[in-house]
Amino acid sequence: MPPRTRMLAAAITAALALGAQAAPAAPAAAAPDTTSDVSRGVEIPAFYSPPSELPDADGTLIRTEPLPLALSLPGLDGPLPGRATRLMYKSTDASGAPVAVTGAYIEPATPWRGEGPRPLVVVAPGTMGQGDQCAASMGLEHPLRINGETVSVGYEDLSVYRLLARGVAVVVTDYVGLGATDRLHTYVNRVDEAHAVLDAVRAARALDSASVTADSPVGLFGYSQGGGAAAAAAELQPSYAPDVELAGTYAGAPPADLTEVTEAIDGSDLAGALGWSLNGFLQSEPSLRPIADRYINAAGKEALTDLSTMCIGDALFSYGSDSSTAWTKTGQSLSDIIRAEPALQAFLDKQRIGTLKPSGPVRVATGVSDDLVPHEQARRLAVDWCAEGGQVTYVPVLLPGVGSGLLNHAAPLLTDQGAAVSWLTDRLSGKPAGSNCRSMPVQP
Image (cartoon, rainbow, N blue to C red; front, side, top):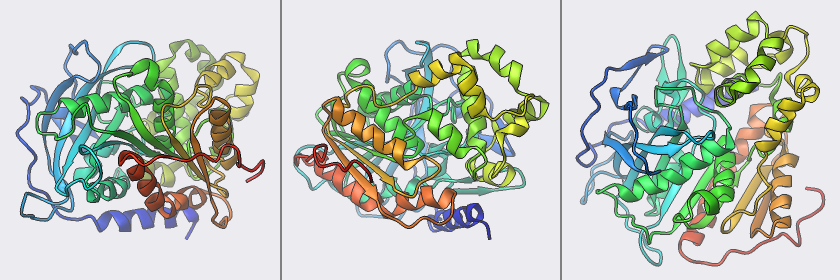
């Protein structure tokens, strides 16, 4: 069995363990007066269709409704692990335009036993795909979907439930365009993701049924794509959301340098993510379209269209190990084209995470054998943040490499997750964070 198949099978097994249905959440706002969409045979609830006009203020709730959680048990004070509410809230995209973002808030049944008010953590999901059916908020209700057209796995449910078990309230963002049916998901766009993460805090605070308030400590938690989103949010918080003070940020395996990540995933199990990146960037930056038209051939255009509706499971089976050279008219790889085009280099340089001091203490963890989101570029983020004066705890996750591929990237997600949750919970409890900037080794 190839590595990507073993990894997907493991994820499916974990998701199946999350079975069952939950009691409904608190009463919701009025439902949207729209019809449902369908993506790869999955009906997208009408809730996810944004209205034509959006509120002015970032983080404003547009609509809510009860969200049934998978794996829910009856409890004396309500369902365990908590009551969930589906959210749609207003944010601002990288171009400065208003955008609707969806997500979910979960009010834990477990009391918070730390100091002060109940804290709030934003879970920034890892790579889910680009089809609307892949949204993490839908994964809370349907941890596993398999039909003849799509395979989606809500693997972020594990981190969400771990935080809920500690009495931490959780808000999950679907990011810009994932779930919400008015545009494509802008995969790994640092500004879009950071804004969606920070505005999720504001939306959770505005929810009447939520126990969190403006006094609640706030943490960010993310791995892989989510690690990059959390990292970008920690950098942009002072300028974009000064009202959202951060007690701590966990950024696991962050794709801080997309130029290096592009080269690493080309021809790998996650080659399909190249298509998601291209689709999102071409939507956000139309000026890049003439360059794409000059290089992308018919097969590449077909792949981009196909991938735009896929989840990660679909892409592993359909595009795993593919090379981008098959998508170009010249036979060059995407990395070759980036090196040849100054406009592309400049665009990706603007996506670089690590040029600003992060707000609050941060924990950067990355597997030393990770060759998909390369360990060294993630470690460099920690070094860059240290140089900016950040309070950084860098953790190299020491696991043996297993050839190359998805397992090297995914294994640290599971092996380090407990320690990451504990570190973040300590920050939310007011315990001071250390920093190993001075002792960080030159080599991992």
